[in-house]
Image (cartoon, rainbow, N blue to C red):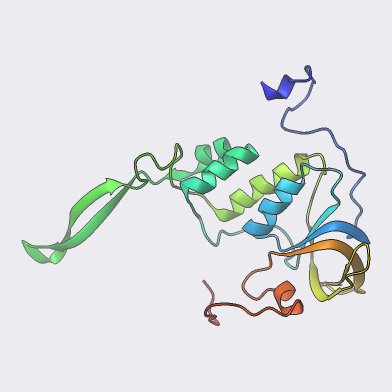
Length: 224
């Protein structure tokens, strides 16, 4: 009954009272946190920060809009636990395919040209989680994150069609990170000052490149 712990309030209890000024049409000049990238990592952080209207948060992505086709549709039970904390696990479970069992197949000893099921086990280890392993389009999961962000006190929404092109650090400044954002569909670049810049922009992260770090591990010029 946390919805009514401070008395009943009419309306959708999943939509928090707004504690943030109206969202400007373009990225603001100053923020506390700039998140670069609207993938799962960026949206998870943005959904968390959307609960705090006093933290000026901005999230950008160079894509023209939200993800339309899933790139990784399997959802581990631990991820569903996280969705429960955000309040949309029930929606995921209602729409998803539940992977309850895993079957193993081997050549059929009686017919080498065929295969036979050799074993069948529970997909999720007993006692690991109260939630199952499920499959749902990653784009749909992003929808739930975006809805949670819009309904939070900060009323947070991404700015699409913006790429980070420059990043410099001035340690003595109140907002020490100076960022240049370039519109991907043309137009003048704009600058922004941020207290923190969080790189959630994937394997070829521009944030990582600008702060002088190298990708650890192997890279491949391949689409997955």
